[in-house]
Length: 400
Image (tube, rainbow, N blue to C red; front, side, top):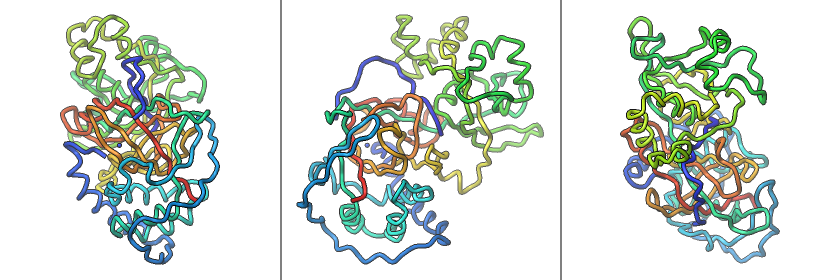
Protein backbone atom coordinates (compact mmCIF):
# COMPACT_ATOMS: atom_id res chain seq x y z
CA UNK A 1 0.00 0.00 0.00
CA UNK A 2 1.99 2.96 -1.23
CA UNK A 3 0.42 6.11 0.15
CA UNK A 4 1.21 9.78 0.60
CA UNK A 5 0.93 11.92 3.68
CA UNK A 6 -0.58 15.37 3.24
CA UNK A 7 2.10 17.85 4.25
CA UNK A 8 0.47 21.04 5.56
CA UNK A 9 3.31 22.95 7.12
CA UNK A 10 7.05 23.45 6.85
CA UNK A 11 7.41 23.33 10.62
CA UNK A 12 9.66 20.44 11.65
CA UNK A 13 8.88 18.47 14.81
CA UNK A 14 11.34 18.18 17.70
CA UNK A 15 12.61 14.68 18.59
CA UNK A 16 10.70 12.89 21.23
CA UNK A 17 3.35 5.05 19.32
CA UNK A 18 -1.60 1.89 19.07
CA UNK A 19 -4.43 4.01 19.31
CA UNK A 20 -4.78 4.72 22.97
CA UNK A 21 -7.68 7.04 23.30
CA UNK A 22 -10.97 6.27 21.58
CA UNK A 23 -9.60 3.20 19.78
CA UNK A 24 -7.30 1.59 22.33
CA UNK A 25 -9.83 -0.42 24.36
CA UNK A 26 -11.34 -1.94 21.26
CA UNK A 27 -8.01 -3.14 19.92
CA UNK A 28 -7.21 -5.11 23.08
CA UNK A 29 -9.87 -7.76 22.59
CA UNK A 30 -9.63 -7.46 18.82
CA UNK A 31 -5.91 -8.22 18.87
CA UNK A 32 -6.31 -11.41 20.93
CA UNK A 33 -9.04 -12.69 18.58
CA UNK A 34 -6.91 -11.74 15.59
CA UNK A 35 -3.86 -13.53 16.97
CA UNK A 36 -5.82 -16.75 17.42
CA UNK A 37 -7.27 -16.41 13.94
CA UNK A 38 -3.83 -15.94 12.37
CA UNK A 39 -2.35 -18.87 14.23
CA UNK A 40 -5.17 -21.04 12.94
CA UNK A 41 -4.58 -19.86 9.40
CA UNK A 42 -0.89 -20.71 9.75
CA UNK A 43 -1.50 -24.21 11.12
CA UNK A 44 -0.09 -25.73 7.98
CA UNK A 45 3.21 -23.89 8.48
CA UNK A 46 6.15 -25.66 10.04
CA UNK A 47 6.69 -24.61 13.64
CA UNK A 48 9.14 -25.66 16.31
CA UNK A 49 8.75 -26.27 20.00
CA UNK A 50 10.37 -23.44 21.89
CA UNK A 51 11.67 -24.04 25.41
CA UNK A 52 9.67 -21.98 27.86
CA UNK A 53 11.62 -18.81 28.54
CA UNK A 54 11.70 -17.92 32.23
CA UNK A 55 9.65 -14.77 32.94
CA UNK A 56 11.48 -11.64 33.91
CA UNK A 57 14.18 -9.48 32.31
CA UNK A 58 17.21 -10.96 30.59
CA UNK A 59 20.64 -9.89 31.88
CA UNK A 60 21.73 -6.90 29.82
CA UNK A 61 25.37 -6.57 30.74
CA UNK A 62 27.18 -8.04 27.72
CA UNK A 63 29.31 -5.67 25.63
CA UNK A 64 27.44 -3.60 23.08
CA UNK A 65 28.07 -4.44 19.40
CA UNK A 66 29.19 -1.88 16.80
CA UNK A 67 26.73 0.55 15.26
CA UNK A 68 25.00 -0.50 12.02
CA UNK A 69 25.15 1.87 9.05
CA UNK A 70 22.12 2.15 6.75
CA UNK A 71 21.70 4.28 3.62
CA UNK A 72 19.83 7.08 5.42
CA UNK A 73 20.42 6.23 9.08
CA UNK A 74 22.82 4.84 11.65
CA UNK A 75 21.63 2.39 14.30
CA UNK A 76 23.39 2.93 17.61
CA UNK A 77 23.21 -0.02 20.08
CA UNK A 78 21.66 0.69 23.48
CA UNK A 79 20.57 -1.17 26.62
CA UNK A 80 16.96 -2.27 27.06
CA UNK A 81 16.75 0.09 30.02
CA UNK A 82 17.23 3.01 27.63
CA UNK A 83 13.91 2.34 25.83
CA UNK A 84 11.32 4.62 27.45
CA UNK A 85 8.37 2.56 28.67
CA UNK A 86 9.91 -0.82 27.79
CA UNK A 87 8.11 -3.53 29.76
CA UNK A 88 4.78 -1.68 29.94
CA UNK A 89 3.43 -2.43 26.45
CA UNK A 90 0.81 -5.22 26.12
CA UNK A 91 2.87 -7.18 23.60
CA UNK A 92 0.03 -9.52 22.60
CA UNK A 93 -1.43 -6.58 20.67
CA UNK A 94 1.57 -6.52 18.32
CA UNK A 95 2.11 -10.27 18.13
CA UNK A 96 -0.53 -10.81 15.45
CA UNK A 97 1.06 -8.09 13.28
CA UNK A 98 4.45 -9.74 13.79
CA UNK A 99 3.10 -13.18 12.84
CA UNK A 100 1.53 -11.61 9.76
CA UNK A 101 4.92 -10.16 8.86
CA UNK A 102 6.42 -13.62 9.12
CA UNK A 103 4.49 -14.55 5.97
CA UNK A 104 7.29 -12.56 4.27
CA UNK A 105 10.02 -12.40 6.91
CA UNK A 106 12.88 -9.94 6.89
CA UNK A 107 16.20 -11.30 5.67
CA UNK A 108 17.70 -13.77 8.13
CA UNK A 109 14.64 -13.91 10.39
CA UNK A 110 12.81 -17.04 9.15
CA UNK A 111 14.17 -19.13 12.04
CA UNK A 112 13.07 -16.48 14.55
CA UNK A 113 9.59 -16.52 13.01
CA UNK A 114 9.41 -20.26 13.71
CA UNK A 115 10.06 -19.47 17.38
CA UNK A 116 7.67 -16.51 17.36
CA UNK A 117 4.51 -18.36 16.32
CA UNK A 118 4.23 -20.72 19.32
CA UNK A 119 4.53 -17.69 21.64
CA UNK A 120 1.37 -16.08 20.26
CA UNK A 121 -0.69 -17.05 23.29
CA UNK A 122 2.16 -16.73 25.82
CA UNK A 123 1.94 -14.13 28.57
CA UNK A 124 3.66 -10.76 28.31
CA UNK A 125 6.59 -11.78 30.52
CA UNK A 126 7.43 -14.76 28.29
CA UNK A 127 7.11 -12.67 25.14
CA UNK A 128 9.27 -9.90 26.55
CA UNK A 129 11.95 -12.34 27.74
CA UNK A 130 12.08 -13.98 24.30
CA UNK A 131 12.49 -10.60 22.59
CA UNK A 132 15.29 -9.60 24.96
CA UNK A 133 17.06 -12.92 24.45
CA UNK A 134 16.82 -12.88 20.65
CA UNK A 135 17.09 -9.17 19.79
CA UNK A 136 19.18 -6.12 20.53
CA UNK A 137 17.74 -2.56 20.55
CA UNK A 138 19.39 0.14 18.42
CA UNK A 139 18.56 3.84 18.52
CA UNK A 140 17.78 5.15 15.03
CA UNK A 141 19.83 8.28 14.33
CA UNK A 142 20.99 10.22 11.30
CA UNK A 143 23.93 8.91 9.30
CA UNK A 144 26.35 10.73 11.61
CA UNK A 145 24.90 9.14 14.76
CA UNK A 146 22.94 12.19 15.93
CA UNK A 147 19.26 11.84 16.99
CA UNK A 148 17.42 13.93 14.35
CA UNK A 149 14.07 15.67 14.75
CA UNK A 150 11.61 12.79 14.33
CA UNK A 151 8.07 12.98 12.98
CA UNK A 152 5.09 10.67 13.45
CA UNK A 153 1.98 11.04 11.31
CA UNK A 154 -1.00 8.77 10.68
CA UNK A 155 -2.87 7.26 7.76
CA UNK A 156 -5.98 5.12 7.43
CA UNK A 157 -8.24 3.30 4.99
CA UNK A 158 -11.26 5.44 3.99
CA UNK A 159 -14.69 3.83 3.71
CA UNK A 160 -16.70 5.57 0.97
CA UNK A 161 -19.89 5.16 -1.01
CA UNK A 162 -19.62 4.80 -4.76
CA UNK A 163 -21.25 3.57 -7.92
CA UNK A 164 -20.08 1.13 -10.59
CA UNK A 165 -21.57 3.43 -13.25
CA UNK A 166 -21.70 7.24 -13.33
CA UNK A 167 -24.93 8.74 -12.00
CA UNK A 168 -26.42 12.22 -11.76
CA UNK A 169 -24.53 12.80 -8.47
CA UNK A 170 -21.58 10.42 -8.69
CA UNK A 171 -19.45 11.80 -11.49
CA UNK A 172 -15.87 11.59 -10.13
CA UNK A 173 -14.01 8.60 -11.58
CA UNK A 174 -11.46 6.34 -9.90
CA UNK A 175 -9.36 4.83 -12.66
CA UNK A 176 -7.54 1.58 -13.16
CA UNK A 177 -4.06 1.63 -14.69
CA UNK A 178 -4.22 3.03 -18.24
CA UNK A 179 -2.58 1.14 -21.10
CA UNK A 180 0.92 2.29 -21.89
CA UNK A 181 1.70 3.65 -18.41
CA UNK A 182 5.40 3.14 -17.64
CA UNK A 183 6.91 3.34 -14.19
CA UNK A 184 9.20 6.34 -13.80
CA UNK A 185 7.96 8.12 -16.91
CA UNK A 186 5.59 11.10 -16.51
CA UNK A 187 2.14 10.60 -18.02
CA UNK A 188 -0.70 13.13 -18.22
CA UNK A 189 -0.98 15.37 -15.14
CA UNK A 190 -4.13 15.55 -13.01
CA UNK A 191 -5.24 18.70 -14.85
CA UNK A 192 -4.55 17.12 -18.25
CA UNK A 193 -6.49 13.99 -17.30
CA UNK A 194 -9.46 16.19 -16.44
CA UNK A 195 -9.28 18.44 -19.51
CA UNK A 196 -7.46 16.88 -22.46
CA UNK A 197 -9.55 14.77 -24.89
CA UNK A 198 -6.47 12.65 -25.68
CA UNK A 199 -6.05 11.66 -22.00
CA UNK A 200 -9.77 11.02 -21.59
CA UNK A 201 -9.77 8.82 -24.70
CA UNK A 202 -7.03 6.61 -23.22
CA UNK A 203 -8.95 6.34 -19.94
CA UNK A 204 -12.29 5.55 -21.56
CA UNK A 205 -13.84 2.49 -19.91
CA UNK A 206 -11.00 2.39 -17.33
CA UNK A 207 -13.09 3.76 -14.43
CA UNK A 208 -13.49 1.22 -11.60
CA UNK A 209 -15.91 3.31 -9.54
CA UNK A 210 -17.48 6.75 -9.39
CA UNK A 211 -17.70 9.01 -6.33
CA UNK A 212 -19.77 12.09 -5.59
CA UNK A 213 -17.04 14.26 -4.04
CA UNK A 214 -13.70 15.04 -5.76
CA UNK A 215 -12.10 15.67 -2.36
CA UNK A 216 -13.08 12.14 -1.31
CA UNK A 217 -11.31 10.88 -4.43
CA UNK A 218 -8.22 12.94 -3.59
CA UNK A 219 -8.14 11.62 -0.01
CA UNK A 220 -8.42 8.06 -1.30
CA UNK A 221 -5.50 8.64 -3.64
CA UNK A 222 -3.36 10.10 -0.88
CA UNK A 223 -4.13 7.24 1.52
CA UNK A 224 -3.40 4.71 -1.23
CA UNK A 225 -6.26 2.30 -0.47
CA UNK A 226 -9.90 2.34 0.53
CA UNK A 227 -13.11 0.39 0.90
CA UNK A 228 -15.97 1.31 -1.40
CA UNK A 229 -19.60 0.43 -0.72
CA UNK A 230 -20.25 0.00 -4.41
CA UNK A 231 -23.69 0.14 -5.97
CA UNK A 232 -23.68 -2.26 -8.90
CA UNK A 233 -25.61 -1.84 -12.14
CA UNK A 234 -28.41 -4.10 -10.81
CA UNK A 235 -28.81 -1.93 -7.70
CA UNK A 236 -27.09 -4.32 -5.28
CA UNK A 237 -24.40 -3.05 -2.87
CA UNK A 238 -21.02 -4.78 -2.65
CA UNK A 239 -18.06 -3.67 -0.53
CA UNK A 240 -14.77 -3.89 -2.39
CA UNK A 241 -11.25 -2.74 -1.65
CA UNK A 242 -9.36 -0.51 -4.04
CA UNK A 243 -5.58 -0.67 -3.67
CA UNK A 244 -2.71 1.28 -5.16
CA UNK A 245 -1.73 0.07 -8.64
CA UNK A 246 0.40 2.93 -9.93
CA UNK A 247 0.54 6.68 -10.51
CA UNK A 248 1.09 9.08 -13.37
CA UNK A 249 4.74 9.80 -12.58
CA UNK A 250 4.28 13.38 -11.39
CA UNK A 251 5.50 14.59 -7.98
CA UNK A 252 3.04 14.67 -5.12
CA UNK A 253 2.13 18.18 -3.94
CA UNK A 254 0.04 18.90 -0.85
CA UNK A 255 -3.21 20.78 -1.45
CA UNK A 256 -3.06 21.81 2.21
CA UNK A 257 0.26 23.51 1.66
CA UNK A 258 -1.16 25.13 -1.50
CA UNK A 259 -3.94 26.66 0.61
CA UNK A 260 -1.41 27.93 3.14
CA UNK A 261 0.60 29.45 0.31
CA UNK A 262 -2.60 31.25 -0.78
CA UNK A 263 -2.73 32.80 2.68
CA UNK A 264 -5.60 30.61 3.91
CA UNK A 265 -4.87 29.01 7.29
CA UNK A 266 -7.60 26.40 6.77
CA UNK A 267 -5.07 24.24 4.96
CA UNK A 268 -4.22 22.74 8.36
CA UNK A 269 -6.60 19.79 7.94
CA UNK A 270 -9.18 18.12 5.73
CA UNK A 271 -12.09 19.82 7.51
CA UNK A 272 -10.58 23.18 6.65
CA UNK A 273 -9.91 22.12 3.07
CA UNK A 274 -13.53 20.99 2.68
CA UNK A 275 -14.76 24.26 4.18
CA UNK A 276 -12.63 26.26 1.75
CA UNK A 277 -13.91 24.20 -1.19
CA UNK A 278 -17.52 24.78 -0.16
CA UNK A 279 -16.92 28.54 -0.06
CA UNK A 280 -14.85 28.66 -3.25
CA UNK A 281 -16.52 26.23 -5.69
CA UNK A 282 -15.18 28.07 -8.74
CA UNK A 283 -11.59 27.51 -7.51
CA UNK A 284 -12.03 23.84 -6.58
CA UNK A 285 -10.24 22.56 -9.68
CA UNK A 286 -7.42 25.04 -9.16
CA UNK A 287 -6.84 23.55 -5.74
CA UNK A 288 -7.09 19.94 -6.92
CA UNK A 289 -4.80 20.56 -9.89
CA UNK A 290 -2.12 21.99 -7.57
CA UNK A 291 -1.32 18.31 -6.95
CA UNK A 292 -0.37 16.97 -10.40
CA UNK A 293 -0.10 13.34 -9.21
CA UNK A 294 -2.99 10.98 -9.90
CA UNK A 295 -3.11 7.49 -8.42
CA UNK A 296 -4.56 4.50 -10.25
CA UNK A 297 -6.20 1.57 -8.46
CA UNK A 298 -6.98 -2.10 -8.78
CA UNK A 299 -10.08 -3.72 -7.32
CA UNK A 300 -9.58 -6.47 -4.73
CA UNK A 301 -12.42 -8.69 -3.43
CA UNK A 302 -13.11 -8.15 0.26
CA UNK A 303 -14.29 -11.30 2.04
CA UNK A 304 -15.23 -11.55 5.71
CA UNK A 305 -11.70 -12.51 6.77
CA UNK A 306 -9.94 -9.82 4.73
CA UNK A 307 -12.32 -7.22 6.16
CA UNK A 308 -10.85 -7.88 9.63
CA UNK A 309 -7.47 -6.55 8.49
CA UNK A 310 -6.10 -3.56 6.69
CA UNK A 311 -4.86 -3.51 3.11
CA UNK A 312 -1.58 -5.09 2.10
CA UNK A 313 1.41 -2.89 2.81
CA UNK A 314 4.66 -2.62 0.88
CA UNK A 315 6.01 -5.67 2.77
CA UNK A 316 3.24 -7.69 1.14
CA UNK A 317 1.25 -8.47 4.30
CA UNK A 318 -2.01 -7.08 5.69
CA UNK A 319 -1.64 -4.04 7.94
CA UNK A 320 -2.74 -4.13 11.60
CA UNK A 321 -4.43 -1.03 13.07
CA UNK A 322 -2.24 0.69 15.62
CA UNK A 323 0.65 -1.73 15.16
CA UNK A 324 1.79 -1.31 11.54
CA UNK A 325 3.85 1.65 10.42
CA UNK A 326 5.11 2.99 7.12
CA UNK A 327 8.83 3.77 7.10
CA UNK A 328 11.63 4.75 4.79
CA UNK A 329 13.01 1.32 3.82
CA UNK A 330 16.43 2.91 3.34
CA UNK A 331 16.40 3.53 7.09
CA UNK A 332 14.39 0.56 8.41
CA UNK A 333 13.82 -2.67 6.41
CA UNK A 334 10.33 -4.09 6.09
CA UNK A 335 9.55 -6.70 8.71
CA UNK A 336 11.60 -5.01 11.43
CA UNK A 337 10.08 -4.58 14.91
CA UNK A 338 10.36 -0.94 15.97
CA UNK A 339 9.96 0.65 19.40
CA UNK A 340 8.27 4.05 19.13
CA UNK A 341 8.12 6.83 21.70
CA UNK A 342 5.92 9.82 21.01
CA UNK A 343 4.23 12.52 23.06
CA UNK A 344 1.83 15.07 21.65
CA UNK A 345 -1.76 16.29 21.52
CA UNK A 346 -3.03 13.26 19.55
CA UNK A 347 -1.06 10.41 21.16
CA UNK A 348 1.16 9.77 24.16
CA UNK A 349 2.66 6.31 23.90
CA UNK A 350 5.68 4.04 23.94
CA UNK A 351 4.98 0.82 22.07
CA UNK A 352 6.20 -1.92 19.75
CA UNK A 353 5.12 -1.74 16.11
CA UNK A 354 6.11 -3.43 12.84
CA UNK A 355 7.66 -1.73 9.80
CA UNK A 356 5.34 -3.03 7.06
CA UNK A 357 4.66 -0.22 4.61
CA UNK A 358 6.06 2.90 2.97
CA UNK A 359 4.75 6.15 1.51
CA UNK A 360 5.73 8.92 -0.85
CA UNK A 361 6.25 11.42 1.99
CA UNK A 362 7.87 8.95 4.39
CA UNK A 363 11.56 9.66 3.98
CA UNK A 364 14.44 10.03 6.39
CA UNK A 365 15.85 8.22 9.39
CA UNK A 366 13.29 8.89 12.16
CA UNK A 367 10.05 9.10 10.19
CA UNK A 368 6.97 6.89 10.57
CA UNK A 369 3.32 6.87 9.52
CA UNK A 370 1.03 4.92 11.87
CA UNK A 371 -1.78 2.91 10.26
CA UNK A 372 -4.83 3.75 12.38
CA UNK A 373 -7.47 1.47 10.81
CA UNK A 374 -10.47 2.14 8.58
CA UNK A 375 -13.72 4.09 8.69
CA UNK A 376 -15.64 7.16 7.61
CA UNK A 377 -14.85 10.81 8.30
CA UNK A 378 -16.50 10.81 11.74
CA UNK A 379 -14.90 7.58 12.97
CA UNK A 380 -11.84 7.13 15.22
CA UNK A 381 -9.42 5.91 12.52
CA UNK A 382 -9.85 9.10 10.52
CA UNK A 383 -9.97 11.36 13.56
CA UNK A 384 -6.63 10.09 14.87
CA UNK A 385 -4.91 9.98 11.47
CA UNK A 386 -5.99 13.54 10.69
CA UNK A 387 -4.63 14.90 14.01
CA UNK A 388 -1.41 12.91 14.28
CA UNK A 389 1.65 15.05 13.57
CA UNK A 390 4.08 15.09 16.46
CA UNK A 391 7.61 14.33 17.69
CA UNK A 392 9.03 10.82 17.47
CA UNK A 393 11.89 8.66 18.67
CA UNK A 394 12.58 5.24 17.15
CA UNK A 395 14.56 2.14 18.12
CA UNK A 396 14.83 -0.94 15.89
CA UNK A 397 15.02 -4.44 17.40
CA UNK A 398 17.58 -6.43 15.42
CA UNK A 399 18.54 -10.09 15.87
CA UNK A 400 21.59 -10.71 18.05
